[in-house]
Length: 500
Image (cartoon, rainbow, N blue to C red):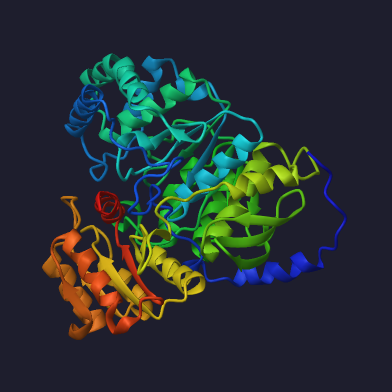
């Protein structure tokens, strides 16, 4: 670590106003899931694992997936941590074998988790990361040292905890859910590794989320917006009440820019549990940001000082804000801003950020025309994605391919994308919860008008139709296709494009 350089606070004072007044709706999006690559296949280092090539291993993994699928899915919840706490008890509380950083929020969680993981790894700490959902393979959810665990290790972990899962199932009114079992697997795998620190993303909410059996020393809250309102609340303040449950006694809380009512709720909770708070735009933030080839160049103000010439190989202002939050979280984990008045080693920070990938976020998978996959799935995320596309790509003609999940605000998402799309192709993904094509098409006609809407029920046909539309009028150089609306849409498109 090095001492911070002397500098004036004038520049940072100037950005406080900009950060404080920034529209949070345009700040972040759900990080979504895993990296999407070109038609040429999956390059070395792709963080999305393929299915196992060994038929017997693939069969064994599918058997585990089949057993897990018999449990409550992630959309069916009984808001309680009773069952997961019981599982942790019979497993010997593996989640207490290592310190944790816990992340909640509406959008931006997985990108922020990946950045935190990269920073911790750069400082030679062994990391475990638990994120959801997955795109291609269930093993993506549990990572060690920045890479998904192998299929073999995933199967072994499941078999190791299975007797304990069945024991808890027999005792409780309801069996452990799909997500609860995976959470137990992650915590057990991290203890077995062992890891130096776990980076844990909530599944939904916070207070009663299955991940919330850890006592994280650092709690991160990415921007909160309306999503899962049937379960979390009708206002951002109510949703913040649920998410504030990850803030534990004496912890440090890293708050991204929040709506006023959400911020009030989060700050009140911090006071109640004597937690220390660092706020984006106040105690940390972005000093400067420039669009660069392949990403952006940042100067970040952390809790201990300033970090300049930070290259982030990701597009969009929201990713810069995610980077500021991630940096503050790691500084807080190391005690900077509290016990220590210094910065992290700037060169190590630069190296870490330069290696970050945020799979499925404005990810280019093909050229001529450019095809981008993005997992935005709610209006909040779609607005940020639209802003990122406009900033990073100079498309003269952009065609959208959209399939959403039935429990999402599809019309709001389409309205967010309308200004940047010449036309939209409505389709369906493979998930049973995908919005009915006819219903989604009707919403699209309301937003775009009938002349700008095409319907192709099969995703492969939809992508082909969008590419044809993008290439019309010989605009090959400036044409693009954006495939979006759901993480399942992104996952399906990735498989199709790889198969190409």
